Image (cartoon, rainbow, N blue to C red; front, top):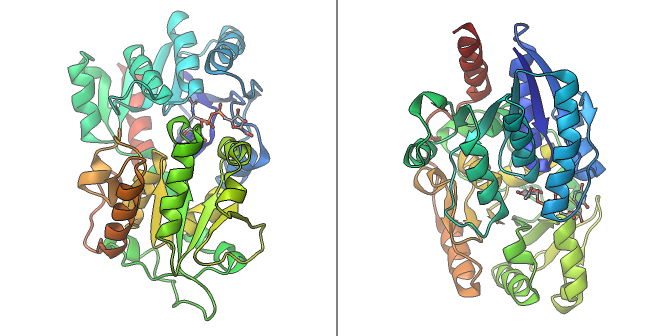
Length: 398
Ligand code: UD1
């Protein structure tokens, strides 16, 4: 068995980290790591390899940014040459980014078996580029590893044979649990003048978080914001409305906003930085209450500590909905739908869309909520990647 593992964009790296670790303990399977270069910055890519101890990619396709068609086509052209040279038996793709569908399509056309990790998730919103990537990747995959029960139901409805589908849990949560203690050693809160807030922790997390102290004098409790989806950031009225709503619930809290490069570009283009009085804070620097403090994209460990100690996270990310669920931190999702419904039933997530009054209401309700009795979703226990490798080994012996 020779597997090419593919990663390309930031949300892929925490998933590949868990898989690389599990494959590292399995000498029977030969692996090669290909980075497509969809994300290429120090802050969006290299830092994650360092912090998560992901082996250096064997091959970097260096495709960089472009329109969806250009980016996808460029990855396909370059990845086909890699497959022809290295002749893998399988190509493993994770998540739902352009690199995922591009490499899956190349492999399927060359008759190479496709493994999709994080298969079956559906938002049922085809205006999201990720939804198209998910639906198409699943249709051409031979082995589909699913993180939550809804994925099994969705794949069955779409006619994917049950023997291809394996419910194994969540590899991104493997990485979170593995790095939780190390993340607590980060200085990010001190660097930004923020307090450890003593969030009511669900039982399963309190063991890992027991080193928490009380808030240091002079530090402030805070909310964390991330936004990058085209539907939320590409129009000045929508982005401005979301940020104003968040500002209006920030009394007594600093809002810490690690800004994705495309969102920063939009904020500047629309003049929202001046209009809303957004602050730019460099590390180390003090974040102030009652204001939105924009900071550069953070490393994995810094962001994990920031999220784990926040009063509330407001986001449009998919992965953060899952991470806050396991951390027991309230999450308000600025979307009308989620492909991760288990975060609503088991977790701390609530959907509010991009409407200002619903964002304000949702934030207020989330700040009052008590999640101390939460249990993690089934199989989100830190062993998903091992289960995947187990299934692959078994399938190679058949
Ligand atoms: C991609 C994924 C999205 C994921 C997100 C996480 C797709 C369709 N979308 O969206 O699912 O949630 O990554 O970040 O694959 N840029 C940099 N440096 C980088 C990378 C990007 O400055 O290292 C800037 C460029 O201006 C680029 C823009 O960010 O044009 C968007 O990057 P791109 O990878 O095209 O999409 P994301 O919005 O990051």
